[in-house]
Every structure is written in C-alpha cells, then in structure tokens.
Image (cartoon, rainbow, N blue to C red; front, side, top):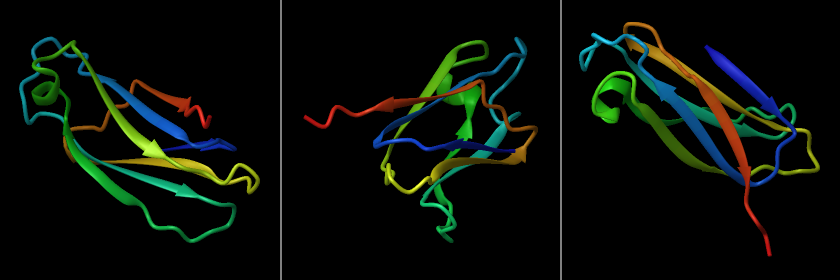
Length: 105
C-alpha cells in the first residue's frame, strides 16, 4: 500500500495505527514502514523508518500507536511524501496520517 500526499511544507509526519482485532497477539501483524520525501519527478529512494508490530508497540490491541517522523519538502517544487507499508506477517494497516507544519520563526 502506498499513500501519496502532495505539495506539503517542512514539518512532521504523524502515522496513526490501531490494531482492530481484540484477540490480536504480537507478531500477527508486522510490516515495514518506509517514507520518501521528493521533489517533482525526482528519483529519491524510500528510506526505511522501522518495522512495525502495532500490538507489541502499543501494548495490546485496540490501543492507539502514533509514530512521528520529521519531514522536509521544497514548498516551491510540487513534490510530495510517499508512505510505503510492506507486509512481513499479516496485512499492513494505517489508520491515519497527519502532516503538522513546523513553525519556522
């Protein structure tokens, strides 16, 4: 699964995940998270961020897990952010993505 978010400024990328299955155990849903921040038509590679096991990292199912990654985009270039989730065990899951601008004062 790849989500593309276009025309963003420097800030933070927040990924939100919740394991919906009440009986889920650690290691049942594991996936790799990779992020690519790119200018328009660039060949930038994806940067692996971490291996995600929502149930283990959140301390159980049905608990919110938030991961925050710093991002930086050229606001004049029409680039974007791509988030790639690669399943290792089970299916990858992303419940939300938030872009938070950084105050540049």
